Image (cartoon, rainbow, N blue to C red; front, side, top):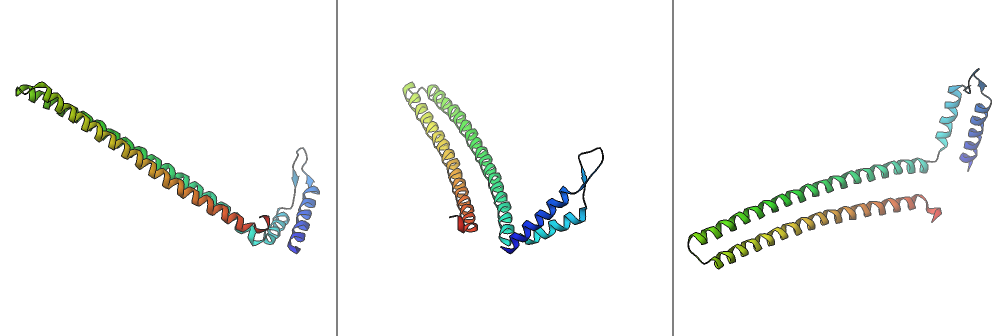
Length: 175
């Protein structure tokens, strides 16, 4: 309580210095004694409770943690997108290769005088397998991206809960 009264007195003294400062001709500026004002500000800073200083530090750290988390989330999303694109490229490559292989199989059957129906059946099985593999790859990449996002969401929720809890601990009389 004493520190608060002393701070108020110092603010009033600072206000008085500013109000009573001499004006600089032909401008809206005033001249003040810099060292006197800085001395009062130093006294005010010394009277600020340690809890306020800690709260200021915690707030800065909170902003840093959130910023780092956002950056990490962006990097994870970028990596997931990169992985997804790689899987998509592999999928397309596999489809093309399987199509090419199925065409070669059909051609070989026709050339070997095997019934066309058997060749079509083999080609259909290869295409079906290729589509199944491609679907599995696609679902796997979706699951991977979803897992990354679930982990990110979980970590961000935990950070926000920690921050909220820390803020409540700093303000026990407001609960």
